[in-house]
Length: 113
Image (cartoon, one colour):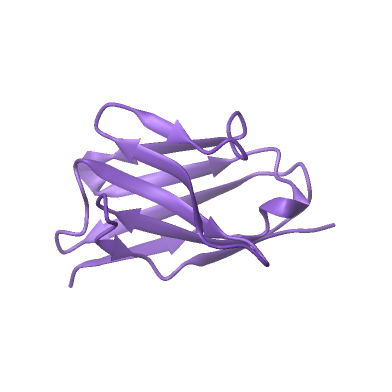
């Protein structure tokens, strides 16, 4: 029952935009911390956006281009990705809790011309 489900990944050209959605169910939604991670080719999984009840934090690599948000009424978080670069290509994961406690299955984002 408790799960996170990402959607919205796909193929986009450099400079384009995508919006990722993560829907939490079965107590998987965290009031304190939701986050987006990604794993790009040849690299370890890294956090890119952490969304708390008070603040939103961004990794330097995405700051100014990506925007994380949450809709508590819908148990949903979003990641608006603008000005996408080829190096943004990878699998994007939704996560819940500080540990994190729950992970989504990931959604592929491919930036290519």
